[in-house]
Image 1 (tube, rainbow, N blue to C red):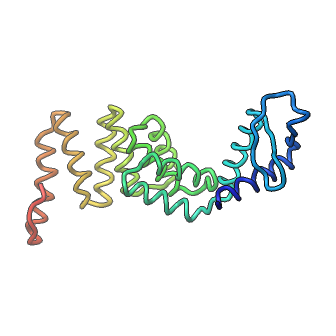
Image 2: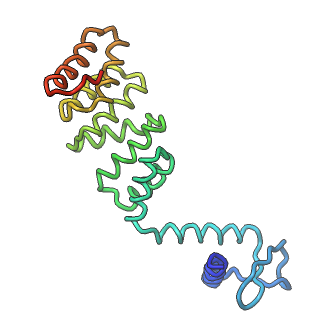
Image 3: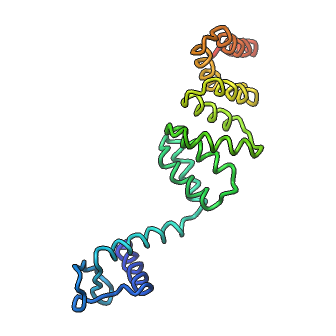
Length: 206
């Protein structure tokens, strides 16, 4: 019922604004009859499409940024990276200077394997002087997926220099090192971390 009422209001407002109202008696085109609270409103298929587009744009304009951000974070956490991308794109479009939003959009692209778009975004953000461990790690992940292993190694190491406890990053870096024939370096990378854990009284991770 709420949808029907909202639809009628949007339809009536839009048609009144652009002068698209017609009657079945004077129209020479095939018409689709849509219900209006006062009378039948008839629109050609193309004009009906215009109404739908207008409604979608209106809905987009009335989004609450806080709600969109919450949904973006939720999508990212649940693995709905396409949904996260859509929400972060909207947020970036409405707040272009926000580096954090740009980075999160790039993260969602990396998770989907869209590295050709993500890599230039990382480079632009880093060029601007921003740098966090997750930015470095995701950048390295995209570089590795793009076949740029040497650069990926560099940025994985930089991520670890900020937060040494990133076991997933350490493991990914070790795999690339083995791939490049640097087995001893990979072994040392993992063994040194496990040694620190043991010294603290914890069990080795790797």
